[in-house]
Amino acid sequence: MNLDPETDLSFTRVLKAPRAVLWECWTRPEHLMHFFVPKPHKVTSCDIDLRVGGRFNTTFDVEGNEMTNKGVYLEVIDQQKLVFTDAYTEGWKPAPEPFMTAILLLEDAEGGGTKYTAIARHRNSGSRKTHEEMGFYDGWGTVADQLDAYAMGLIS
Image (cartoon, rainbow, N blue to C red; front, top):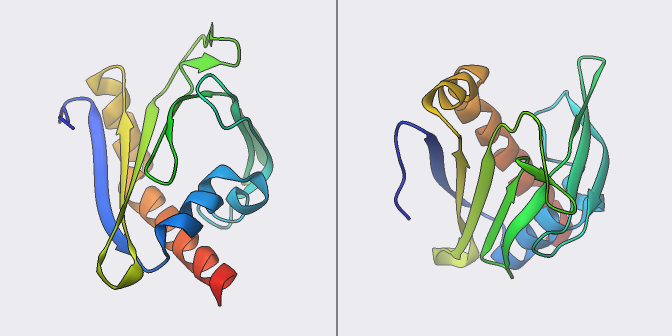
């Protein structure tokens, strides 16, 4: 995948949890609510229709403020790739102020773990810069750590 440094943010990390378990965590609301935002923030609701064009809607509590994010899946490859965006909502309705498209890539790693790549694609360099300044690397890194800890708890 070609990344554009002007508009894309990305990081790769090897997680301990197996790919199949990470996939379940990312695709089932009852799991996603445990890791999707850095603590102490919380996911208060999640609605997933896991198919291309299906909804990926989440609501967060961030320091007492409710934030709702509505989006759709653009690509779903079982246990390998999830692509979702807030550029559209269910029914392919364009969002008034889209922020990004997220791409998650999962590959087997040595020792039973998973090579985990998270990519955030933005419409322009300004949005990318804003996301980086908001703490993309720390925030998405924290989410990856929370995901791995939660997923490992499911298999122990």
